[in-house]
Image (cartoon, rainbow, N blue to C red):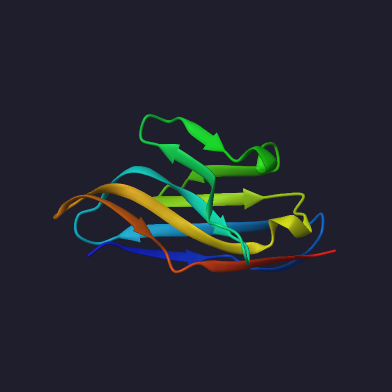
Length: 119
C-alpha cells in the first residue's frame, strides 16, 4: 500500500514563509507525477503545483512566483516552498502522487496539513 506522509504546515503572518514536505512510500512505488493540492473551506480542491517525471512543472496562477516545488534527494520526496504567503493561501494542503506500485498505476493523496495565514 502506498502512503504519503506530509509535514510543515502551521500558522504564519502574511508575507511569511512555510515549507511543506511529503514522502511517498510502500509497495515499490515509482512516481510519475507528484505535487500539492489545497482546499479552503467552502471551496473545491485545486491543484497548486506539480512536477512530472520528465522534469516539467506547473503552478496555479495565483501562486506563480511565490511558491516553488522541488524534488528531494530522497526517493519519492517533494517539497513546496511557499513565500510571500497571503491570507487567501489559507487552506488544507494535500500531497498528491501518481505512479506505479505493485498493484499498477494509482493516484494517491495524503491526509493534509493545515496552512493558516493571518493578516
